[in-house]
Length: 276
Image 1 (tube, rainbow, N blue to C red):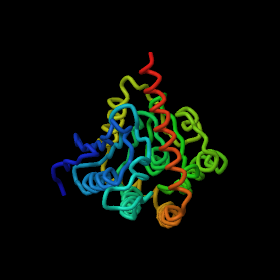
Image 2: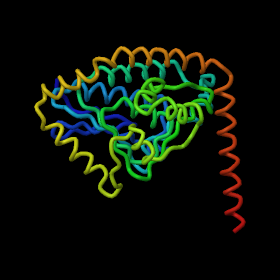
Image 3: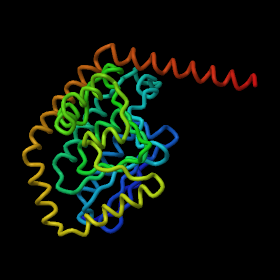
Image 4: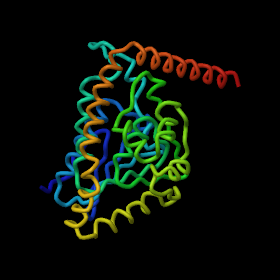
């Protein structure tokens, strides 16, 4: 099936010579992930993976960040007609469907990490075939800090790729790791200078897109075959875990405390500048 790219608010979608570029498009918020972003991410990915002209999908971010992860202010600020929900069921369902798309596709997936990847910006890249990052990018997964749990199959992929101890540094110890550290650990394929980052990544994508398509898909399927059921199982277990954790008081309390602290710091900064 071939069709025009969808016009979405939070994900920009372009296609050229068999390459679909899906870009988080919320730079004013560090590409933070709200329910609307998740919906657009699913829609754009469904389009790219069902389009016969697309052979390679490149996920990246607009601006300085790849993504700063969950939009905490949106998560703890209730809408006028709805109670506060740290992680809505709608978002959990969308995440599950999105992960299944990434796990099951035979198209080549590239994460072009143009800046810091926090939370989901770290966990999700392990579902991509190739991961490129700028040298300045850094990564951490504050799931325990926010009272939540691992996502995007990272409870399995991190240990498989990096070993249990490095996975624990991210998932349990809330450590912040650099792009160079994750390249050495195997989660990042290659670090590419920021100056020509996206053009350089697209040159790699274009080379891949010119390879024999049926052979490309067949070999990816061979690589994924022993992993698929494990990843699908991890996805289901993590989704169930997110539902359990979201129902607990810990996430809401932790996120509210963080948001209040950020507001306090902003007010102090504003007051300081006003006296200069």
